Image 1 (tube, rainbow, N blue to C red):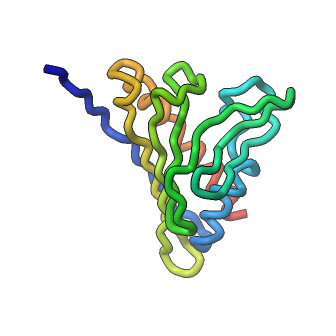
Image 2 (image 1 turned 45 degrees about the horizontal axis):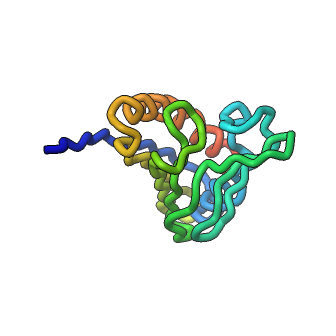
Length: 156
């Protein structure tokens, strides 16, 4: 009998002083304006980060040498409420579609000029127990700073 491993998702949220549609736009099509340059899986230095804002669109990095590295694909696209993207990165921070986890981001209006942004990074068990636990630990520590960078840009 095969025993399946379950690894708890990482859940983070942040309040943003910006309308829902603006927060969604900054997080998605504006990703390149705020994503931290040091958080790259490609060949540094990082030139830009792009999210193709449509179902099936890519989330990718372009480095200064012209190379592109896929981070994931948009699996669910429901502007301005939410999107889900695959996270095609393994526990060694290399592209790998065989162990994709998922990131869901929800944008919940909290009045005309405020939005609660909820992020869930899940399905780490697809990487296996040890690798999945390692990735979960890494993103548990990484998402808070990344969300702060997003909030700063959305409120600018």
